[in-house]
Image (tube, rainbow, N blue to C red; front, side):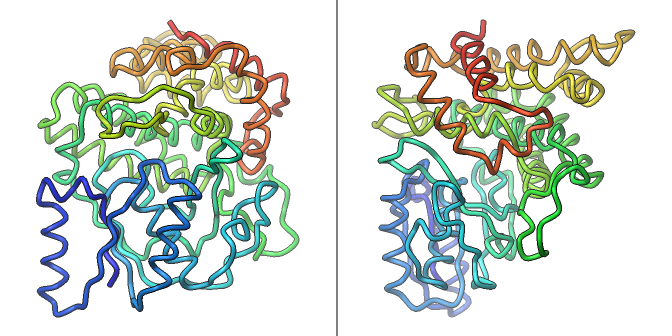
Length: 390
């Protein structure tokens, strides 16, 4: 077995416990702990080279989404060796299909946000291109996940907030994404996208995750030892992962990729890093108020429901009027959990908008899910509205 673990977890005894459990079963163990928070093409190549040099039957990933996605990449490229860009989604990469099943992988998340333990995607930063992108295939999804909220107790308030905002955007985007029965039919089932659009099943998972994020994220940030809040946020992460891993995400994540990939000098506190980085959950949340203002006319009832779940007073209002409260409800949550106040707070100015528009426009695999047709002008307006949020 190859155990892929966030090196920060050695300090808390979590990694040692996983190591002991595996070794006590008489299993030969190799360990890789050089995880880069918000993985890059450089960190992936290093990890893949390591995985290709050892003989393993299965993978265990212990950590947050960065660790789990790194493990997915190690599994994929050691099972089916190829150039990194071969499997990366078009138009950035070649978008070649993954040839077949991978080796078994067990994912054990230590954050409550990405839901990476449930999903069929790998996300990475391409440093030279200054954008984030991904690899998608149902073969990538882990064989098993063990989700224990006790493993999330040591998250800093900042990591708790960012990962929890990822729960919210995952769930809200998958709840509002273009429905599955309005998307073009692929030429054959092998070409069916991992993200199929909103459907009755994904709606159930996503709606519940939104409710828990609205109810428990503030508590988890304010008191890291609030086990009830940690439990529901851990479940919310997994529920949102199941929702968006099936239905997909759209504009906030599409714009979140260039926002993270173009980072300049902003270094987040609480993440244990000393290099510039816009954490994934924050990058998707910064444009969420403007994005959902843009998509609200497509399904006012669903947008009104999200506003209600986030605490907006919608009683007696029409669906249209209630939906109009959603951006304000999101902003209120962002303020309460300490999210930066818009793109300007993480180092961007209006001069950066055009480059962000171009980076977002490349995320067609996500933008195709927008419930409202989106143009570059629309992306530009959303980014302009997101420079300062309050």
